[in-house]
Length: 394
Image (cartoon, rainbow, N blue to C red; front, side, top):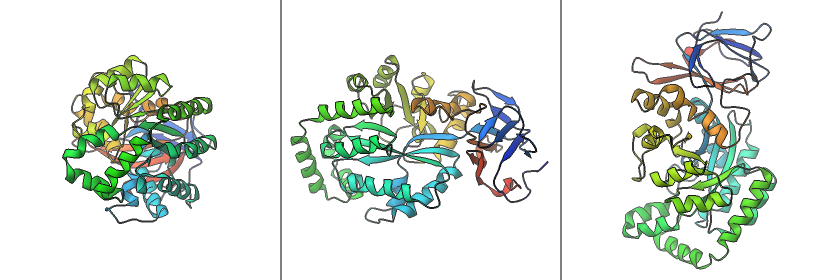
């Protein structure tokens, strides 16, 4: 039997992890072996498997990040400092698997704002991801954050939906929030700079967009019809109130991402919608924008999934912090980053350690303070990441 300190990692055909505590699909932990063969979890040991001792470790389903815009920091780490998409995406892939994220949706902005949030930027990211070589280790997908007043972008979005390029969509309308920022010129200046505009250019563009906004409801209806027909999951982002959530639910957008208020979240629950909140909010215990606390919603049963939002490492650490602070137990907390998002975006082949599902899992050891240390990530049964203490011959 190999130990955690032996031999460099190689590809895996048949593997048994033994001695660890695995998270069962019902959210409880058990001392049990986990087997993988030909990329999937099996209920019996493979023939002549590589057996690895993971004593004193947790075996957890791989993290599914349904909404992360951390890739933007890799593409433009400083306002005005652009880097090639392939450079940024390659490093995004490495950051994902080094934080236990085995499936990730890049939350790509698609907005009337243009520049880094416009159609050309979205097309560049999509093209770079499709051409990335070697292919990403994590299963990286595209989510578009579609600003509803971006009528010129609707036809391209329909084309991307039809050919399978875009696999998840959320509707946004941030114009009311931008209007509230007119009294904060410094904030607006920073925001405009991130998309390559001066403040006066930003305000002029927004005014033109609002003036030309006839047809927004028709565009939402057309896109919604297409997504329902194609089976593409879709929802809305930053719902401020119950009325907004009801309006999106009426067209089939049954995912509520980052509801800004408890009442909006409660409406989503009453409608049977999936509710997603930011893991940074849950980890820090507070929203950076002064919106409802993710912890408050989790404690009240008003959150089904956590997403990385702007910070990938938060998804690994938030469940342990929630458990440590008594918000919920670790099994339930981990389901917020695994089976919860899998169900929300209709990924039926992953999210739990069940026979027949993809071999997407991670091995974690907790330190003396209960904090997680990632030892290994497996994607489709293959070793994707390992630290020096988990070097083994596979």
